[in-house]
Image 1 (cartoon, protein in one colour):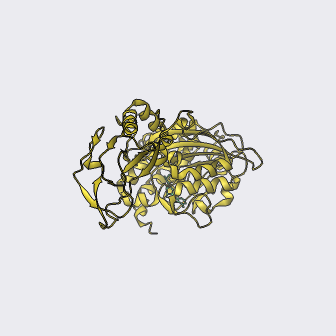
Image 2 (cartoon, protein in one colour):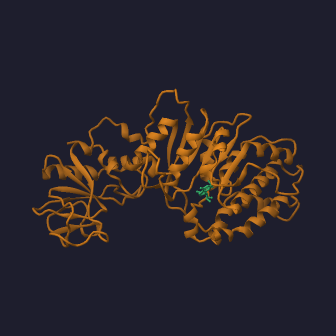
Image 3 (cartoon, helix red, strand yellow):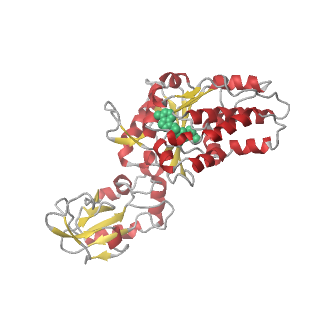
Length: 431
Ligand SMILES: C[S@@+](CC[C@H](N)C(=O)[O-])C[C@H]1O[C@@H](n2cnc3c(N)ncnc32)[C@H](O)[C@@H]1O
């Protein structure tokens, strides 16, 4: 995998390293340090490294607002706490940790102590150098004007280094705290993985690996893609996490930032000794409601037509996709037709658009499909077939989907932009 795109960041990092050893009396040192510790490292990365490269490595750094919320979830560090970030980027989560660590008499003594307590890895040497320089800047900033200066950035933070975070098992075993905002890109699940197959988010791998290797009592704090909290296909991952740890906090946060348009949540979990009992945690607050749900009255599926993949062969059917049917209507006539050999659906049934933004007026925008002919349905629609086969059940469902209660339920349950079969099936429904 080429990492040449990231090397464009090297000049900025060299500037950070110079700033870390400049005297405080240098022009604007305080101001430049404040910028280096708050957002500038991320802005600079966006300026010099293409989005494609940043996506390839999941190089999206935690902003100060989210970092503050993150650290507020963590209990106070005990004296010998060791905080490890296996995908540290330019160190934003370790900076949040360091802001809570005590100072020693001199900057050098503080840095030596922090060096014993803060460890981390990243694939990119530029990021590792930047993280160390920023930690030095934070120590100097916190020490104030009287503190001694630093003459070199090398030699500090021996536990912060270039490595593949997924393979550094000793670091997981030593840590009392694991801080993670891992890459979210898709990777192949290892062949021996028993909680996932095929392509999975690297974030799921990082958390499971970390918890498998950590010692009992280790506290994990992570920023993760919302799909791990709310997706139906990630249920086995959640189950694995509950086997390994007591889940203490699951808190939806919203969009990561304006450069990475993905919903995230905060997870806090404590590694359990294997003998302790399981204490399942509701990952979504709405899941435990005792009411009946759509799944009790409808069969719920994703439409089966994948337009650019499926050949247009076989019998011709009326064909629906989100752009050719109005919402909140009963549709009996269809403007489009398509040949399709796979599954088609016999009306009446309800379709719900899969694309659904948190906070939109309607999270589950629906249409009732009536008429006599079986219909081919595109895969951006979720199909709800009434178990009693009646149009009345479909109308009742469409009416209930238009309510604020359903919006609130889905906002809580699934923050990502695509409704899942699991989230629709779990919507409370009264017959
Ligand atoms: C989402 S960023 C987060 C960085 C930092 N923890 C933060 O919160 O700002 C993920 C980082 O993981 C790094 N990364 C990706 N794959 C990795 C791996 N296998 N081992 C170590 N670091 C990795 C990327 O280079 C990137 O800096």
